[in-house]
Structure formats: C-alpha cells, structure tokens
Amino acid sequence: MFRPLLSLEKVSVMIFDKIPRIRFLEEPTPLQQLKRIESLTGHQSLWIKRDDNAPLGQGGNKVRSLEFWMGEAIAQSSDIILVAGKAVSNSCRLAAAAAAKLGIECLILHNDHEPPNLEGNLLLSHLFGASFEYIGPVDEEKRATAVRLAADRLRNQGRRPYVIGNEVTGSFGYVMGALELHQQANEKQIALKHVLMPGSMGTTEAGFLFGCALLGGPFIVHLVSVEYKVEELKERVAAIYHGIQERTELQPSAEYLKWTRFYEDYLGSGYDQPTPGSLKAIRTFGSREGLLLENTYTSKPAAALLDMASRGELPSDESACLLHTGGIPALFSQEMILK
Ligand SMILES: Cc1ncc(COP(=O)(O)O)c(C=O)c1O
Image (cartoon, helix red, strand yellow):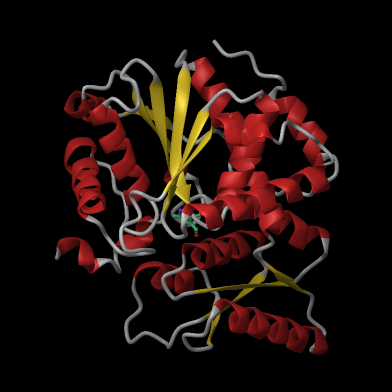
C-alpha cells in the first residue's frame, strides 16, 4: 500500500488554520466497484468515486468548492452571493443550494435568454429560492463585467455581496478530495493507481493534483478534456496549481506533470458536443451499472475509461477509478442523448 507523505488530518490543519471552510460533506462520498463494466472490458478493478452523490442540491464537484467559497463569504459577513453561468449551469444550481442551506440570498446572472421552460438545473435553482437576471448570450468577458456591475449596485444598496468563482479558492475542495479518495482506497485495501476525471476549467483538476502532490504522487491522474485543447487545459491547471502554492504557502513538488496525462482524443468536436463514444458510455453505465452520466462533463472521461480498459492501456491488474463529478440535473435538458 502506498504510504502518503501527509495525512488528511495534517493537511486539514495546515490548510484550514488559514482558510475558512464550511462543511457540506460530513463523510466521504461512496467509492463503488463497477463489476459489470469490469466484466465487459476484461479489467479486474474498476471503481467510481460518487461525488455526484455529495449531499447538497443533488451533488456534484462544486459542492467541495462551495465549502471554501461559502466559507469565504461567511468570513466576509456577506449577505448575498452572486454567481454567473449558462441557464444549464451546475455551478449556479449548487451555489443556490448552498446559499439556501446557510440562509443567505443568491442572485444568479444567466448569460442566456430566459428559456421558455423551467427544467433541469434551472428548475432546481428556482426551488432553492435564488433570484435571476438574464443578461443574454454574452461572452465570458461581458459576463464578468455584468457581475462586477451587479456587485457594485448591491454595495450601493448597502448589501455585502460575495462573488462565487475564484478558481484557487474553489480548488481547495479537491485538495481535500484527493486525500479523501486516497484514504478511502487504502481503507478498502484497493491499490488505486489510476484516476480519470473531466478536464475543463482546471479548478477540480489542479486541486486534485495538488492533493496528490501532498501525498507524494500516489496516482496517475488522467485528465480527459471536455472543453479545451490540451495546451490550454495544461496552462489553466498550471496557473491554478501555482495559485494554490501561493495561498497555502505549501510547496509540494511542481513535478506533477510526471504523473498527469492529458487527453483531447475524447473531446470530439468540442464542449457539449456528444461523440459516438460518449453516447455509448452513457448507455453502458446506465444499462450495466444503473448509474447516470450526463453528456457535457462525465460521459467523455467515462468513454476514456471504457476505451482504455478494453484496450489494456489501463493495465487490467492496476486499479482505476472514475471521478463522477455530477451534473445529473443537466441530463434532463440533454435530449440530444436520445437522437
Ligand atoms: C458536472 C461537472 N463536472 C465537471 C466540471 C468541471 O469542473 P472544473 O470547472 O473544476 O474543471 C463541471 C463544471 O462546472 C461540472 O459542472
């Protein structure tokens, strides 16, 4: 069994002495074996880490980030949080749920036209009691300006807004996530060697890699891009990784690239665009394991797991785990899966 450099408890103390956190996860999310996918692929040890099961607002990776974003909001005595994203955004839904749980307001700026129907994440954000502004389908820069203006407007009204989204703050969730997975695998006596996850904005990925670095690099981490070309994904991850080093004043090895693999082979024609492999992965996980994946984030790393396990690129005696980052409510606005 791999001996970690640092324990979960030790890292918690090192990081959280300085950085505020509100706990939404009281215990580890489940780590489950994919027995029928093992028999399909001929692999001996395939696992899934069920962060889609995190116990807030229908779960997902942003629950871990929100422990730190909301920690900062509360530490700053904020009385309203601001969050921005598309109408299908998982982050907006989970921010609304976190605000509801803590009894503070949530204003969501959707960079979309107001959709005719309330469905998926948008429906849930309404149930969590958020308020909404639709700023039209603008780019990221214009969206950031709209958020700044909304925050100024609220401050002028005597409110204390907190803007959700700082990537370094959000990444702390997966520093802890990596340690949690490592400890959990050891407790179950799984010699976990490979971890696969979606590669997107870099927040989850950089935090996880930093957690792995604190442990001394126990895993090979496979980042399967669902959004950017590999070069851009690498740059995003590196920028956040260095931001974590600065904020925590911890300097684990910057050599994480030695045990990180980046892929764009499963991306197809881009973000949100299904591929034959991703559609097959959704159906395979559904029909063989009773597990839901959605199109945008989880189906492509799942396609990579199926493909690499079947071809022996993940050697059949080396345990591998897919990080399920959630997003299931978005499935209810993804009718393209059936086409
Ligand atoms: C379900 C899901 N998985 C993965 C991601 C990507 O996470 P990150 O932005 O940390 O790369 C997101 C981002 O919103 C998400 O909603």
